[in-house]
Amino acid sequence: EIVLTQSPGTLSLSPGERATLSCRASQSVGSNFLTWYQQKPGQAPRFLIYATSTRATGIPDRFSGSGSGTDFTLTISRLDPEDFAVYYCQQYGSSSWTFGQGTKVEIK
Amino acid sequence: QVQLVESGGGVVQPGRSLRLSCAASGFSFSSHGMHWVRQTPGKGLEWVANIWHDGSNKNYVDSVRGRFTITRDNSKNTVDLQMNSLRAEDTAMYFCVRDASYFGSGTYFGFFDHWGQGTLVTVSS
Image (tube, rainbow over the protein chains, first blue to last red):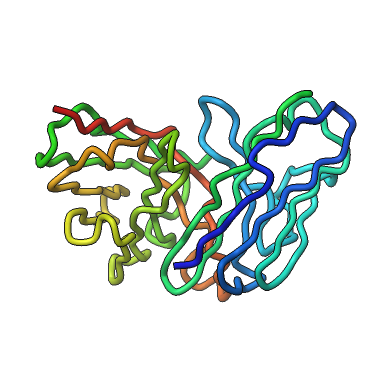
């Protein structure tokens, strides 16, 4: 099973600042198989970016994904008040799907 | 629009059974694989099980294999999770989730594009 480790656990930033979230895998992940989700309190997660860098329909271009192999990054270029939430990375491999433990982006 | 509505959660004693059900609508159910994903405050999100679009293949996370069984009925657009020998560590919110890829699409991306609102399972004596 591939373990995903996200860092930092919590990111305290102000609106308008840039957020950089890391997701590191214990083994190489295919670039088609790395996805990022956003979750707000009381809601189910929603996917933001799939295949490492492809934004879902309706996701603003301030969200971008990058990376390969074992190191992946979600960047929010300028934080909007609605972006404060928990973000999870997720991978697929060998008929198994795993999530990182999440990064909380909170208002400073 | 796509809707996934879970039911069947509740409080159950350790060692007992519970059956979760998910009613799907708004899409071609028989074309998509389906999953159950659970979430706890301590362990975060954990994929539990999946079933292929036609029910021909199923996979489970190690911690539930042999205790949980996923099934689907494409005539009723439902997917169920039978949970036996429940343990305290199975306590979680359980989400019914649609696989984003569909049969015949040609490329598999391995992610989940629609989630239900979840049903809470509490295993406690």
